[in-house]
Amino acid sequence: MQRAGRFLFAILAWAFLVGVVVQVFLAGVGLFGVSGMDLHVGFGYMIVYIPLLMLIVALAARPDRRTVWLTVALFVFGSVIQPTLPYLRSLSPFIAALHPPNALLVFWLAAMVARRSLPLARSHEATTTR
Image (tube, rainbow, N blue to C red; front, top):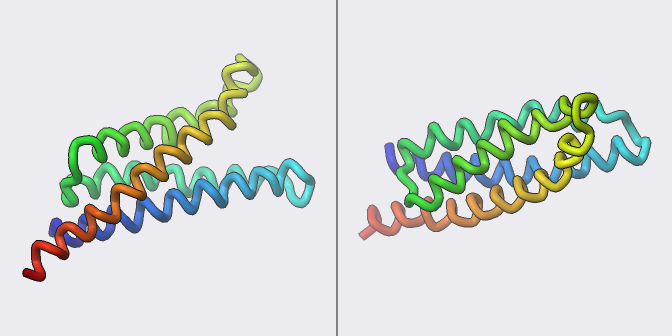
């Protein structure tokens, strides 16, 4: 179970990182008039669940403490705060304007977790092949 969990954790981590890059591209597509912001919004609501899945899979994967905390932070900033910020546009535009800088933080957190997931997935392989 731990081996499969670590492999799935790595897949989810890298999928979310790629999703964040695609999300930034879709924002550009919307901003430069190629399409509306519907693709950006819709895709954002699709990938927002990946960090939650990562937290659940982490129970089976048993990553180190730092990776767990980075994943918790990724969930908070990527799945809770990021989708909430645009809704604050009419109430507090300055707080809503934190949406792009928070996206940078989400990208950094996703990159850190994805980078840490590869040795985690490989560590179990090394112990089972001896």
